[in-house]
Image (cartoon, rainbow, N blue to C red; front, top):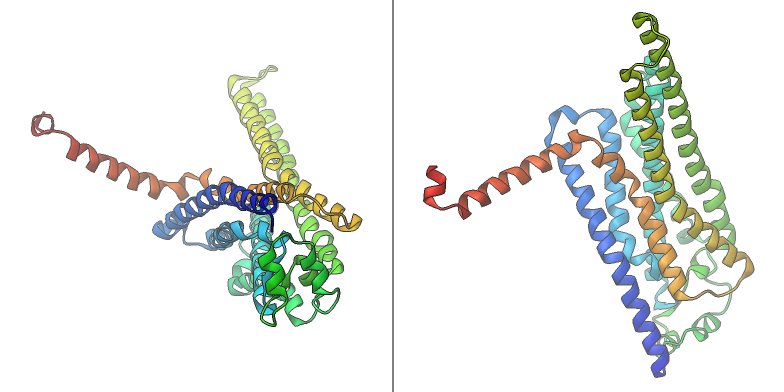
Length: 341
């Protein structure tokens, strides 16, 4: 491997760590804070928050696996079992996160659309079965390459390794212990198309549809409230209270729109870019893949954090702990005269 290739490989690894490590750390810490908030507050120990707790666990696992996701697009010298684990496990965590996210949105959607039937949902009556639904199918689907649906016996690994500038990879590929590990050898094209257009994209559209439906219902209820308020006040013009309600609704719509643009659009761009390059069978630079994968997966993993940090009940224990630490630090830094005063 010449100097230019080794320098490019080193810069690619530095870029991966520069993007993923801070993002992964922030995701893990934020999820940990919200998880502790739910665990410490007994008033939050109900089925609704249990679903959200499961989502936070899946999101935390996604944050842990985030630094390994860009490596899935690189050619590495790994054994068959190690290659499967390196690709199947992150894919399982991602699908489990997506299934949990759909379940949380559906549960809250029913709470708003049909509140009378909310307590009789099958998810509330059979909570273990609901957890099994959001964790077992992702595991089964992600494990299909381990049961034979892969390209491991397809194209020759020499061609895969020959495209890599890493001489260590070339030498290891010639041994019996390791072969060239690439996502193309683990995931067939049909597997990728089915996951993207059969699971991921319908899930995102379902979440967007439920969110839009909730906003539409909220707008109708707001109009009814304003109409009743005007009939009571016997006025034809909007009062200050109505204007405040309309302003809150507008802020809510703007917040939801910005969240969708910031959290989902980068992932949709990354997903369709991957499919476009897969169909055209062209190679793209590692820098482009690293940036798109990190920003796409990372932005999507922020969605539960937005939902959790917006609820004061989830963050109140953390704020109380910070206040106690701040008070102790002030007591230690203050002198005896200041304490006496």
